[in-house]
Image (cartoon, rainbow, N blue to C red):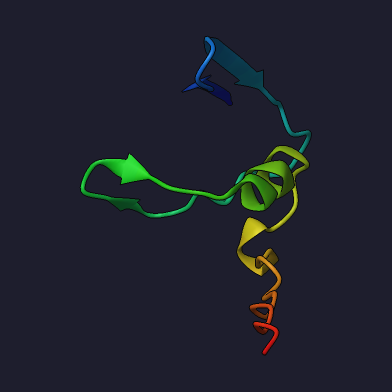
Length: 64
């Protein structure tokens, strides 16, 4: 797998090859495949990225 990504300062090439396994790709919606950084890290590690979820952090309460 090779992925070229613009990171704001230049192009980054991600390259990964799995031995005897396959990547599980996210769906393409309107021609775009979207993933957060945790999901991409899991995909590149050969893990099931669908099990990666961002933790919910509660909003801080305003001091009265």
